[in-house]
Length: 422
Image 1 (cartoon, rainbow, N blue to C red):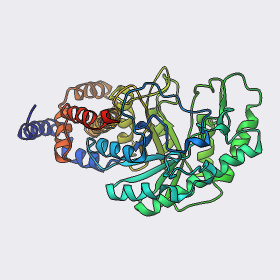
Image 2 (image 1 turned 30 degrees about the horizontal axis):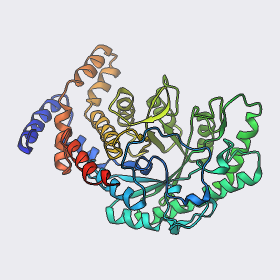
Image 3 (image 1 turned 90 degrees about the vertical axis):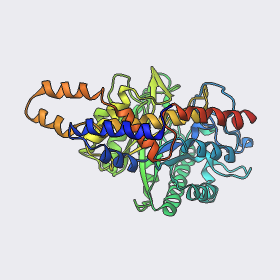
Image 4 (image 1 turned 180 degrees about the vertical axis):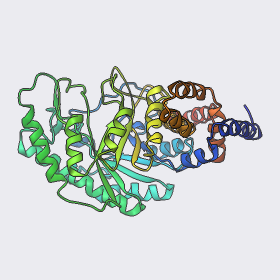
């Protein structure tokens, strides 16, 4: 393995090559250091949460495949695993919580009764670790979600339960944001939809709008919390009809001043999520991204450095939107080491962002303005072979995080010493 001096030398050589194209690697690294990902807690325990089992909280839920040993069974174990993951991801990042991950102390607290005290432990732990928190309502894996409908259910009593739950989640988000001097982003995703042909789609969408209007009637300072709504193309059990479609939430967020959440696994495989960003930023101040990797269906595979992720991060940089788009991870794989999955995904997104920051955008724009499409395409192709890996290794070195390949051994050590004992 190359040593620190070798990495510094490789970086200096890479810096000169990028400088010849008008790109400052030092400036790119400074912008990368300011970027923050929101790491999702639910990868650590296969979207199980820590609600008391006597509540019988089963029903329409999230499908996670695999039975790899060592998953977190308690809040303490989950936090321990998160500490290990964050130690292998360069930069200062955030943690994304779901409402089912509260500290309920063994008490049977249903979701329409949760409140800030159940997340005091997370708030204290995050402050100790230097982390900011984001939050999500949990509108699945519950008997009142078993029908496939929650906020758009025909039964007013079921809608009332979920309205109260989301209201409380927004209050918890405000509570968390107040303590961290950074707005807590509260994201809402619901599983509402039907497996087969639905006749009265308009009814369910009107009911959803009415529920949302009641939920968002209470306003909080945007310095403490911000609202986002997440759409979906289809899911298991909602193959024919999804109430909260992309079009529905795009209309709702643009008319209500909320954020639209784009999950990269929630669209047709031939759709470009990257292309949606500039279209939406013309009309919306901010967006939320949930970065996942769908294969054939919304399977939430571990994110890798593929073309989709590169295009996504490149569009953020070209649109100068890093301060307007919140980036969160959203995948879960129980078929591999869970800490390793976190780190692979986070480092892939950060590498894609670095590649975007190293693009000679000024020169490419100049060629485009001049109508010189040959040089534009040729330069784009030639930049693919530039030594971005040396810049990434230097970034890890300066952030005191293990570089590529070396971090793998640390994950295996943690599995041997910690995970295998569970």
